[in-house]
Image 1 (cartoon, rainbow, N blue to C red):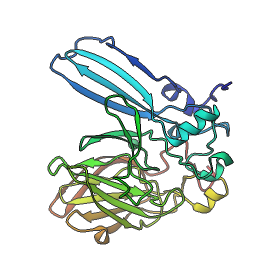
Image 2: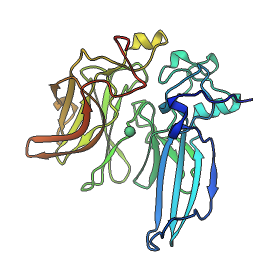
Image 3: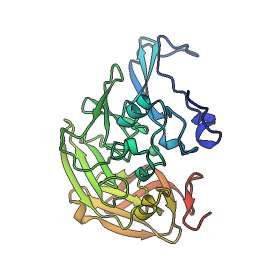
Length: 315
Ligand SMILES: [Fe+2]
């Protein structure tokens, strides 16, 4: 018998778990859908299968659920399916939660020790004829674009060395390339980052590793015509804290922020790191360059912007 989900921010309001896989033929429509608007819109997000065994969790730890809205001759059909990750399958078989704290494998039940913790719960991307669903602490998961059936981990036929890939890659509209990056490339608790390029035909043509100034949450990045921008903010990871069962992320306001700028014509050894005032950011709005002047547009706050992430000072 599955117990009720706990009260609180992560399981109420729009974070309320639906746990519903469904097909709805001909959605009701307010107004009119243009009859020549044909195609598909995919979305994904966290939708936890079971209440957390530790009693609480943060909403970004939920199992990935993907939806498809199929637009056809003025009609819209809907389909929603769980991404069947190793984690989802293990908990499904056990009929209960087995994984512990967000991005802390040292808090998992012994029966899932060493198993994948990926949830594929953040963003879908369509590129080179593939539908991938992404979550920044794991490799992409491939999904059948017609049935939404999970096809499995996607590693460019085993070519990818990193154990993680960002959920927010960028398509260059001019070259057709998909530009990506990874952080904690050796898995939770590790420090390297890398930069990746998938060409317009779907081949992984670049994977270059590098070390950031420190390990911070690198949720997003920016590309311009000539540069790649890596913003690093002090929402920090400490491997010793993880091993002791602590939180993956803590805000450390004693550290500066950094912006790494790499020429696209160069490599990660050409990254220049610029120290900037302590700040907290998450999503990038845009980036562009005028010659060698590089612009990065994003919202930042002076302090921790996440209500579910604590401070190393204890607040
Ligand atoms: Fe995001």
